[in-house]
Length: 195
Image (cartoon, rainbow, N blue to C red; front, top):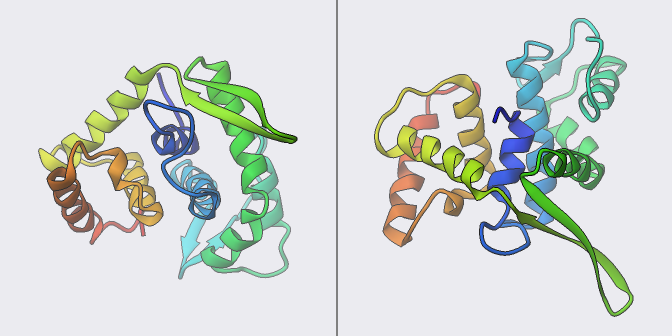
């Protein structure tokens, strides 16, 4: 099953055996915005020049949240750095995240259930088709530990994993975690996509 970067990132950030995420929303929201930026960059809809986001031409027929982000950047009066755009869009991170998670639920990969604790509602999100998540992890482990060829999409996912500190999603034990952390730094040292 073909997943875009935000979908793959969210699937990796979910706990494999119980509902919830591996990381806090303080890391998850900027991570989802970064994943959207990387997806747009991989599709050549957005360029990064001197750490600034540039959109030359407004693309048509984009899905939400891509359309909202692209139009906001395109209509901006001046070019801003990536960090500035991430902080601008991070307050909508939960809204974007839930939309992408609903798409994953429609594909049958996760389950979202509404729950309550006392009077406080929350959403319980758990992985249903663990095989897809395991395939992504096996591919990323192959790149890091077995030296498989790295492509732009894989480099982007690895960059997100490093930036949001979810290396534990790839590790099976503590020594494995340390190897992955070291290999992740080495693999992404000279890669411009993931920077």
